[in-house]
Length: 512
Figure 1 (cartoon, rainbow, N blue to C red):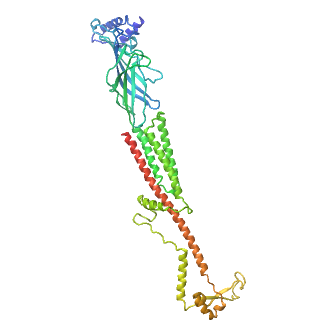
Figure 2: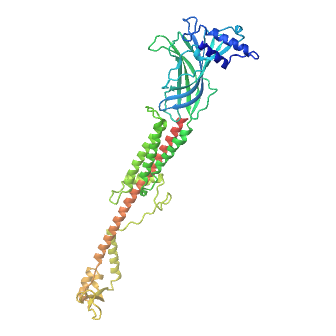
Figure 3: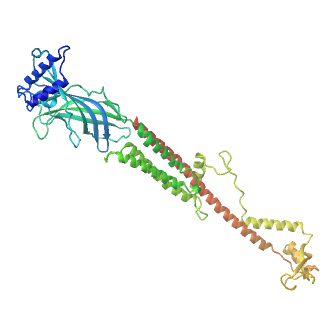
């Protein structure tokens, strides 16, 4: 009687169908109804009069909240309201015999319940539904509403993360009863979403239901189940502002490394810094994604950008070697001068200081060659001959040094002093005139030696000019190689800008 006493107490607390003004009479009939219903009742057996007939169980799911979506472990945690309805052949009564009582509410443990479980349950504790009351109607219909927090396995496809959508299935069915004993039906074509609490990360697009009948390998009997497919779409705003946009902005810094001057010393450092920053973002994405073969879309974007930055850093090193070609480098090839220094330089607006697209830089006049120097000297000498045919060049003779002058480097005999004494016809005329003049010796030039340094001066001037020409040629070669490097910098800068732009548009296009 202890069991029936607890039943009566629960009936008194929870109540039945109460008519106004007759609560005392209703309580007496409720006790009598409970005693009559459970006099010979057993909750261990399937409540059918004919055991060959299947018992229909209607299932209806209401999604209340999505608690968590663990992509890495592929587990969906949801809060559900589960409603199960069946007809118990031994729990029916005539309302007229019990003062019009048509429903009673008793603990669910007192009646037979179908063993409907979540097939794809991923909870390690295997917690089932909450022990709530059942509502029994006078015609034997039993309705059991119970809330449950379920953890179900969900195959997560992160190919388009963070613009992905997921389909998580919740499959409910009887664990021991086959289709010949329990026929499971879905109450509605879709899950009920009227009381759904919006999730900050996932948007629910729908929850269609489908009844399946499956014959498993272990058994020959059919097993019906009802599968609810939860259609989810990720809200990508959080990931766009925290993962995607920083990556895009960092990616646009990589081509700017080609715009840095080669003498700044920061071109390679910029590329390495950008590469390290993208590596950090890649690790953040990898930590939240499942270790599967499906690489997320943002991960592909990171890998492509990192590959591009690695290539840009390698090209920067190559261009810096071209820029720092010294005076000993080979001249720029003719095809490079024509294609790079002329066409590509104009196409990418690369000009030297003082040079523009309308007025190119004026080239400096080339230095005279050795033959030019000698030729000009010969012309000057010949001109002097014609102008001074009637005059004589100045000669110098050694004169005694006055005793009153101080001795500077040695004795007067060791340091001869020269003074202007006359002319030297042998310097002013050609060989024929000199022979004629040799006949009449000049009184002064005959006894004074001439200092003629024309040949040595020309040799010194020619040496200085040739050295300066070599220096100018080396500077010209170095400048040409620097301009080649600058043009290549501009070319690769625009190429990588276009690559980053199209990769970003491709990622955005996948999102749409």
